[in-house]
Image (cartoon, rainbow, N blue to C red; front, side, top):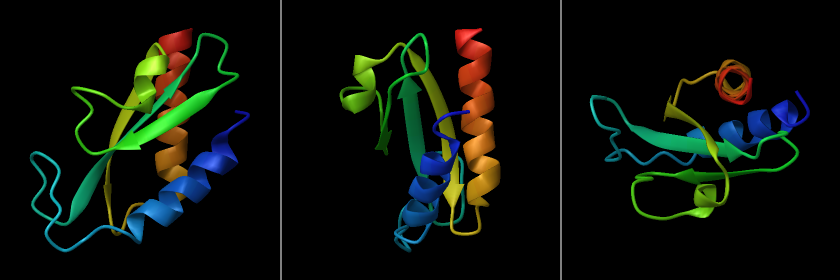
Length: 91
């Protein structure tokens, strides 16, 4: 996938920024939600962290992948999960 390496780097950066008191819903350890969105031909993408229910850069795109990051998340595995979700959504 075209953007996989960019997503790996994004996840690598984000996991190091997780504060001790951050929690994603249903997660007992420090964590954050990451939403990555793409257009119909996966030629553009954007991301946002945290609650995605009201606004953010992902609203410009129709296909969303949502994952939870913890400090021990493997960036390559998370990036692959995002790419897999996009592939399933775009078809």
